[in-house]
Amino acid sequence: MKKPIRYKYINLLLRFIIGVVAVWFIYKKLNTNFIDNLNQIDITDLNWSLILLTISLLFVNWGMEAIKWRFAIRGIEKITISKAFKLTLTGITIGLLTPNRIGEIPARALLLNKGLFKEIALKTTVSSFSQVIITFLLGGLGLILTQKYFKLGLDSLFLNAIVLISLMVLLTLYFRVNKLTPIFKKIRILKNQELVNALLDFQFIELFTLLIFSFLRYIVFFLQYWLILQAFGVELNSVGEILLIPVCFLFASSIPTILISEIGVRGSVALFVFGVVSDMEIQIVLASITLWLINVAIPVLIGLFNLKELKLLKEK
Image (cartoon, rainbow, N blue to C red; front, side, top):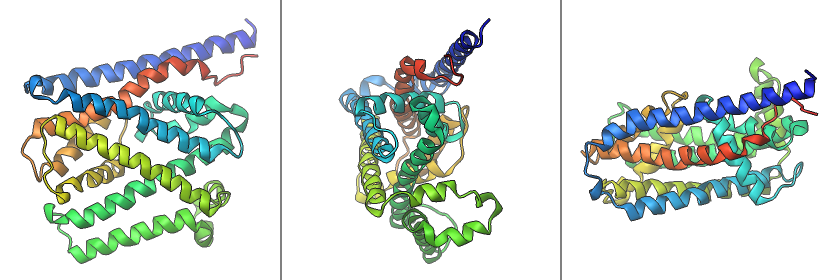
């Protein structure tokens, strides 16, 4: 068998494996984590209008991510918003199989242009880093303003100082990475400064624009979480309680997860955070799982239809 034909079948096999594993994973999570809990409540009590609104916002959520990514890579690869959106969803499908879905980053680069894989992957990393900045910035501020709800065993002044210093370091790394370059040179694992160089390749206004896109996407995700909690009857009755949503994002983003444990971790974090203001434990967990199904599972299933773009081996 000629190599191009053999590579074609290998690519088909890889796509098939990724598709089957993704569908199996979603099925298992529905069957074990979701349905069992759902049977314990009366689904007629759910606000289905809010659930449908949350579902519709998934396209705004990932649409914002696609626009942000398209902006980040525009200097080396120009693509339409439609293509950016399709590749973003397919990246989610592939990334589902990796810890913290970090595989989304190289997957997009691989799907878009294998010849410029390294350059696109680094630009994509910077784009994703901007979302991390926003998550930790707003989550950190939320933690400062809601620490009265938690018993973390830390002095409030000490906690505030730790949060603020951490945020300053992140912002410095993002906007003034050149100031930290001498430090990186002394750390063996960071001597290869490709990410640093990728950050330096962006102008200040470009980095700031990426943050604006990330903030707008964060607002959409924030609104989705609030809507889904409301749909399941979990009321957040004050500004302080609403600010628990960024705290939940912060904690969930800080905990490493793998394919098998992602939903469990997110459900546990949601219960830990929102459990301080509500005793509706099953509804909190269900709301968290439902949001995962909306923002991850549905895009994963849509992304399956574009797996044909995945070609790890050259077929011609």
